Image 1 (cartoon, rainbow, N blue to C red):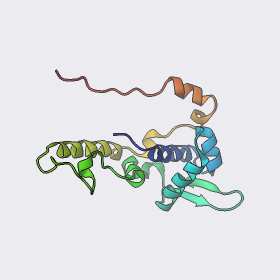
Image 2: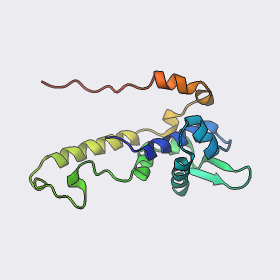
Image 3: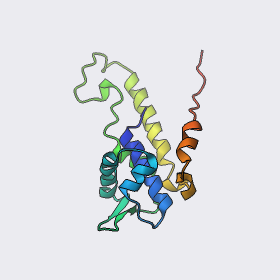
Image 4: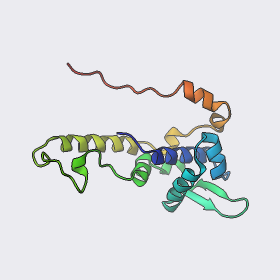
Length: 158
């Protein structure tokens, strides 16, 4: 399973807004911090604002801040909101053409795995992954690019 860039950016915006506390953040500032597209962040921020995860303050000195306390923002809810679909394989799609669908056991297993994936996010809130403001100060990009997270896959069975 791979989350879309939209989901990635949604989580990043929420992380940054949580770090800012009561200080308003802007799309421009957030785009600069992460080095990502301002236009794409606008769409992400709009979706998060409509859902109440962010609150938009209009005007010359406006910006964004969290619409809920970080401990009340479940990551699984955010993922469900911003992911366009979870149709991981053809048989989950409305126009499925696979000839094995009625007899195949894979959809059940894939669905179980997908549910486990999202339920893992449900166990955590934004407060669980919140960072400190210093984590967003330069040269954080160099630090992150060389020390990124590692995936720990279970060993293969023979």
